[in-house]
Structure formats: structure tokens, C-alpha cells
Image 1: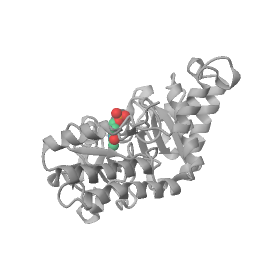
Image 2: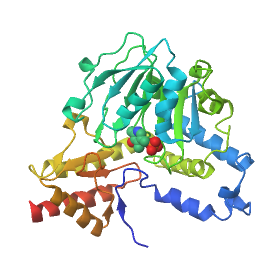
Image 3: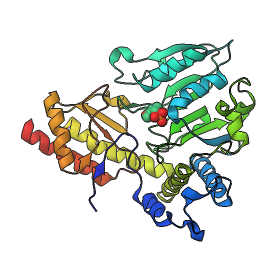
Image 4: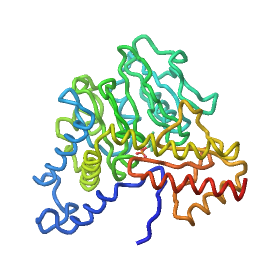
Length: 362
Ligand SMILES: *Cc1c(COP(=O)(O)O)cnc(C)c1O
């Protein structure tokens, strides 16, 4: 079997033990004579998986019944619409803090289709090299919620301390850094994340929301787009992505067995440091996009002096067994995604490659 270090931004690397268990159980799930793929979502086996996955997310985040965890479809992109559809009434405004030219802007644009959304902070003028500082925020006195993007997958920046929004409700798109570090989830009314970056395969979206919000959502929203519908039905309102939830549950099990979020947070810090060090010791050869205070531990983005060198970098890295390093089409350059399942060895291999590439081409 050939092995590569997979630096793709999403879908992305998954923990080998979770994949191995899925493979071992694929044809005959727990002696049932059939695959989990073939089972009813109403079966006791699937309900156990579903319940276990919700309990695991809550346990990892230290949450009790004050919160619900839902497994939905439609990706984080559907959440851009569902959040305002449910929680932005006609007489209120929602605040959006823009920290990247794709996801946070899309979330804002989607909210504008539904109600009154305003920009309460943005680093667009600086090409999103950092997240705003507290004094640069201009929050509404009483918004329905304040929306942030915790980690900016494309630009490679991340919030390292949360904005102080007072009593206002904080909503976060955590698609690319959920469960990558300790999190005080109680600061948030609602958190959503596509699973395909840090938690599992594509096709499942995890939503964590305050139970008290369920009775407050708009009542005229189509049934399938109401959080209350999915909460009432334990994410089984319609046929869920059963295999995705199953694999998500295996990844959650791996996170718990690895020591939980405190341990993963330390590992992720150490991993990112290895790659940022290679940037910093390169002189001006590798130029990080993010300002040091906003550097993402999940997505390391940088440019080389010329585009031709970037192409060569990606090509030679691929030949050396490091794949998925091309930057997003909107910003170019190089992006190394270092999600939970990326090993320290993978980061060290990349850093060595960067040193050698600089020696030959610098
Ligand atoms: C990938 C990503 C999305 C889009 O997720 P989909 O599941 O493809 O809809 C949204 N927000 C962030 C921060 C992302 O990284």
C-alpha cells in the first residue's frame, strides 16, 4: 500500500484507526450479516450509533442538556441560510464579522437574502490577513445574533480568543477547526460545521445549539429547515447520511481515545509550529499570508516568490508523497491543512521538504 501525507483542505485526512475499523466492519456489522450501509436508519444498531455520536460530541465539549447536537445534511453552506431563516426575525438585525472572502462573506450574503444583516467588523481591506481586534468591532446594540467564522480555511487565519459580544448571542461557523482545541462552547448559542474537515466524511453537518433556542425559531420556515424538527426527531426526521454519522462516530471515538481536546490542542499547536518555523527561517522565500497573531493552526497558507515556483513546489511535493498542497483557487499559493488526523511526522516531512526546496531554488 502506498502512503501519502494528505494535506487536502476538505474532504481531508481521517484517522487511520477509524478507517481501519470501518473497513473491518463493512461487510458484516457486529455479526448482523449485513453492512451498516444496508441497515435502516430506524434500526436499533443505527439508533445506538446516532445516540453515541451525540453523546460523544457533548462529552468532548463538556456540554449537558442545555445543548443539543444535530446531524444534518446540506453542508455548512445550508447553515448559512438556516441560521437566519430560523433566528433572524423581520424586526431584528444580525451582525456578521467578515474574516474571509469566501465563507464568512457567503454567510453574510445569504443572511441578506432573508433579513437585515450588517457588517460588524471586517478585515477585507487587509486581504483578510488577520481577524479583527476587539476595538475594531462595531456591534449592534441588540442583534439577533453575531456571526463569526472561527477558522478561515482559505486565508489561513483563526480566532485565538473569542470576541467579547456581551449578552449578544454568538453563532460560529467552525467547519475547519471544530474539535481541534479546547472550546468553551457555552459562549455560543449555535455552532455549525461540515464534518469533512476535522470530524469525518462529507455529507454530515454537525450543529450544536442551545436547547432554549429550539422554541424560539421562526415557525413559518419549511419543516425540514427548522432546527426544532431535527431536534424533536433526534436527527432522524428524514433518512440521515447513515454511513457518514457512523464514520463520524468512529472519529469521535478516536478523539476520545487520543486524550480529548486538550491533548489534540497541544498536538495541533506543535504540528503547526513545525511548518510555521520553516516559513519563518526561510528569509523572504516563503511568505505566510496570515499575520503571526492570527495564524491558523489548521490551514497554513503561504506564497513563494513566483507562481512558477509554486507550481514546481506542488509538483515536487506530490512526487515526494505530500499531496493536496495547492492553495484554494481564489487566493493561489500553497496551503497545508493540518487537521487533527495529520501526524506530526507529516508536518516534519513537509518542513524538511520546504527547507530542501529553498536550498535548491532560493
Ligand atoms: C468548507 C467550509 C465551508 C463549506 O462547507 P460545505 O460543507 O461544503 O458547505 C463553510 N465554512 C468553512 C469555514 C469551511 O471551511
